[in-house]
Amino acid sequence: MKNEVAVLYTTWPDAESAAAAGRVLVGEGLCACVNVLAPMRSIYRWSAAVEETVEVPALFKTTAVAAPTLKTRVLALHPYDNACILMLPVAQEGSSTAFTDWIRQGVTSIDE
Image (tube, rainbow, N blue to C red; front, side, top):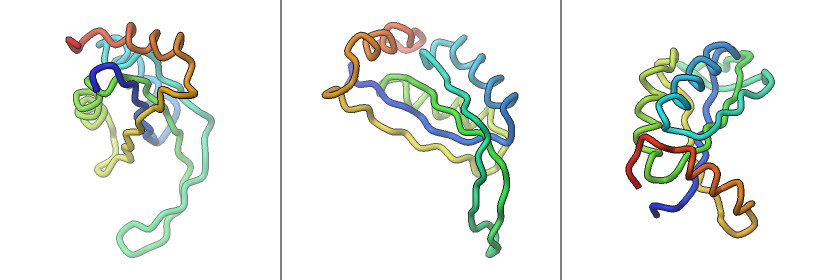
């Protein structure tokens, strides 16, 4: 498990809040890279009503070892009461070895 790579998927109310969290978490060494994506339309049920809003997705590239701490920090930085956080394991087979090695090297705050 210690060498596995993971991606934390989350959504934010705007690009600046996602980027601000990304700068903090890359700076803390909890992830190697954050992709702040283009705005998207989200349709969801909240408090028994169907809601629709524009959100910004972000992908945080990390390791399985750092993932729990990264999740805790994302929750602390996130403005939503119920933040969308999905931890996605990365299959080593089919992934770029050079890139997954770069992710492992970029995650520096967790002693693997």
